[in-house]
Length: 318
Image 1 (cartoon, one colour):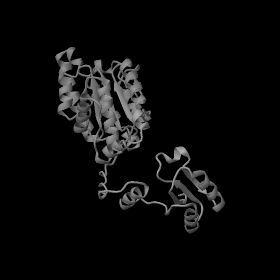
Image 2 (tube, rainbow, N blue to C red; image 1 turned 135 degrees about the horizontal axis):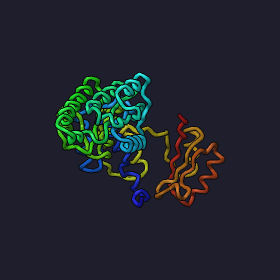
Image 3 (tube, rainbow, N blue to C red; image 1 turned 120 degrees about the vertical axis):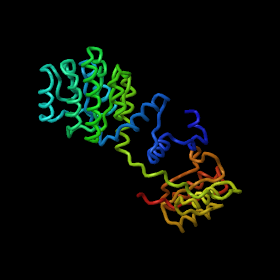
Image 4 (tube, helix red, strand yellow; image 1 turned 90 degrees about the horizontal axis):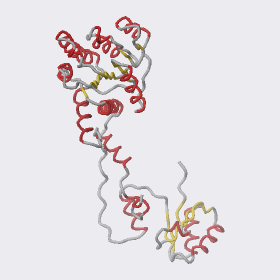
């Protein structure tokens, strides 16, 4: 804030410009090394999302609500799925399951762990959904029995296959990120995360990747030549040579010359007192002067501020 108040503060690059340059070049900006890894894993494994509509699938009410709230807080949409999709989910899951969006298996995984793959496939294929987020305890059902362990890995491989067939991103967060099922998901190109924040950062990156079309950073303008003189007119010449357009202006050393310049340019005009720093703060810049009488008044006010003036034609609006 202190730098912005200084005379040269306006020359400091704005973060908006940096963001625009990165977007134009297809560069992802991250804040921490962990975010770098999280985003890279998503971009390497999953395709960009076609939109912001996310389908949340979980195996517990707490996981469902937390994931849905965090997704909504990031500006993601959670649309209700169609009756056809919801009906298909009801056929698979217990009566206590939530089958709109977010989807809560509510014990459907314990009954048959392959239901994870069936549910994820239905949500992936829903026309309303652009990206699917599976969160909770997938990978932990292997602790129930050897049969659960085998079926869970099969479900993981099937989910990866469905995601690739449909062409939509699937992102997984699980407390059992080191399980055999989690490894099978990674082998299938599905990004898997230990924490919700990392998974949601990845989802953000996939949504951005689908909405931004990098066109390349424009070439810099040709460098200006060396400037030996200083002052207002020299600055105008340097900027004009770089392609910056200016309104027509005349240099005046006296009030009479200023009046003649205004007649030549045509009213309304802008009057500037040259040779003083921060002209506008001391009344050295007046815009919208409509006629010679008003110009004479302003020249008398500026008489103590400058020995030279710039008279400029007011640029037309638009």
